[in-house]
Length: 610
Image 1: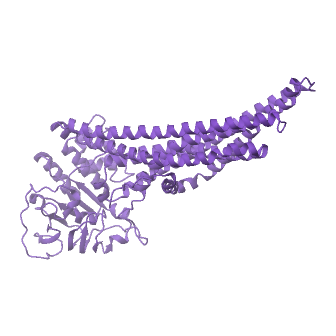
Image 2: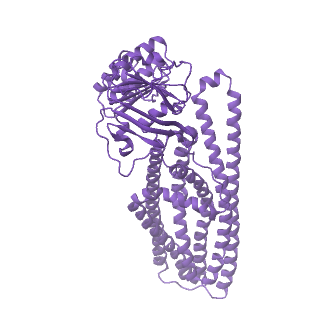
Image 3: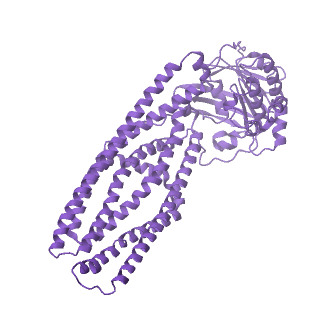
């Protein structure tokens, strides 16, 4: 599994179009769900354009039928009534256009916000299902930037640029047709600007997309550096790393600033060049139109009407220039989001997968081999049978494959060869959630969330009652210290439970596992790093928790496996020995090799390495 890939940036708008299409496909399911709102928005938009076309006609009628005759000395019958009628018509057209514009803006804004809110939720759900190998390689800050900043930019642009751009395009097309009907000669002068603008826009937008993608990548690096630094502040301050990390942050910050300024300069250049083209076309139309009025080919009112339409049509062109830069920057953000969504999970439910039945906990590894992240094998041909209710110690040197074996049991990864069975069921034939819901785990690093103690324990079984949560805490020897907290079970914990001691965090993790009430329990270095007092309390809680469950004790400490029915040693990814203890209920050993002593100093640096 690889991290979202960085691609070479497109050099032209045409080259950027695949990225825009990818982003559109990303939002297609959510767009379909908002179809009624979008259709309503377009109907209001068409009404707005229609009233915009009607808006200058009262002025043209007043000029041709009141002002020009009056200037020539003619008597205009019912001039007052005509002026009043024109004023009312103008006010009605403007008012109705404003109402239609309001409705279309609200409809499109609501649809855009709903769509991208759903996309953000979809990306978050997808990221949670990606493999541990992906998350080990990805930078957390960059992923957060993609889920928040990039989608936020898409959301902003969809509402403030893309949807108005659609309206401007409709306005431009309709008014171009109207101008052709009014005077095709003058209309051709105006329309001649369009291809020049299109060529300029295509060239500039490609450059803007290129620069914007670089800026967003720098923003991702900034976020990653900030997250890493804030998460390791104790080490940063202890080693006086502030200047080093400030320098690294500053480099990315300056690059982001440089790319941002360049993108704005390119966008501003496109906008100003459009102003020049529009000004030139307007001047030519004014000159030719005035001469046609003098020659009697058209009336003064028709010229004013045409110039009004010309101004209205050229305003969308100016907006197109402004929005092109925004959309080009949004395209870069969209591609970064799509890259995440196109990263397929390594572990997924098979088409034939069914929910797992309630497990007893009889576990069998049959010729299992496994790799990590597409690399070499970290487990080779491991076969082992664990009868339900057994307590199994899994020992071995760092990187031997112990935790990988447990990852297979929890379906955090699948074997490349062989199979893992529980109660005779191949785990790959069962749905992932139904398997994981029947395995509880307590890790060396007790991960707590920045919420209440009650919710942290409750994550073991969503929907559990307060009584069940407190019963689990009592089993974990955690109830007493929890009730001594300022708000008891409703005390808000700091990020990763930083406001608690290591032993307290671990007992809350044990309570979470107890609440899960799963038939299979995995204890992965659950007491490593705790002081003697906390080790005693946590071990007592774990002993109570493991009673009647199939329990795997992954450890470097032989003292932690003295009460195990079976002790398995793994070396270099192979099953080196299996020792059955007196009174054990597990499978007979595959080899007679005595269990070697494992030093507690041989710490396993990464859980996935085993």
